[in-house]
Image (cartoon, rainbow, N blue to C red; front, side, top):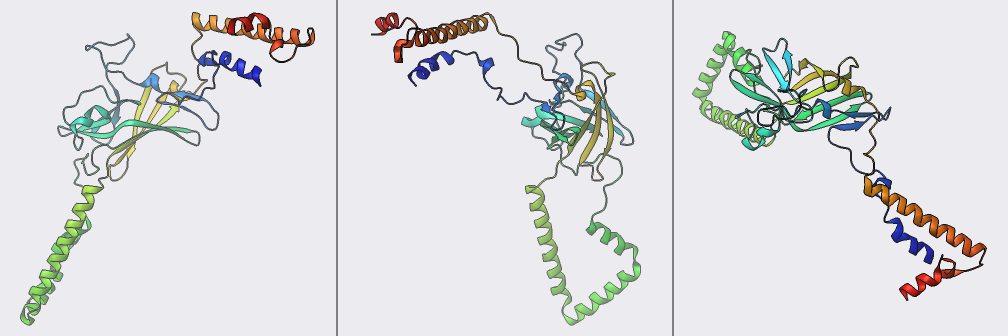
Length: 310
């Protein structure tokens, strides 16, 4: 037991690379649960320009674009990062959150966010997907067509088209007024409608549905590193979720690169640890088997160390 306590301080000198790799994964990386392949989408991230110049020659100067066929607008997005285009105003997004817009479109002079960072990278079976959430409110229009009429609006529309029902209602109202009941009934209906409007207004303020983006990633080994083909697939009927497909070499997966090699200090430390281990273990084996020493005396050069620390 004393020997173990003596060796513990020496074991603490081991470099960090010998420790178990329990650190969390870097952002925008993931392991496949089925194949254990390593996916890193950071190669697709478009970095902001420095002094209006590219950091590297092959860097993109703008975010990724997708043509919105049939939607009347195009889309701009980035992977695992906000878009590099600067927007002074985005519908439904606070000024402090404008820097987090990761996907957007423009319609009639206004900008609408369809997702903010942070991104969520996950697997559904073998399919790799990337999602953004908390964009502009879902009632933000995209097409020139009017939004679907609500139930209340449809009722008003049907009542207006149906003349016979209107006449009957007028007759009923006249009869109610004659009986002294029309006013009371109308006031009750108005109070009920007002309560409904208040409840709907309060619920919409507390729970606002916002636009989101889902990007399905597919492997394309014909594309070079850092390149991608982004296509718009479609949107949900309420134009609250937008679907894209991105083909890239980054979606093919691979093996996680090992950590960088040891520096000069690390190499010296490893050599020192090996020397101490050979010195201790070899000396103990010699003292124990040849000299028949026990306890502390089986340490190599015990008398020397004892005189130093005494």
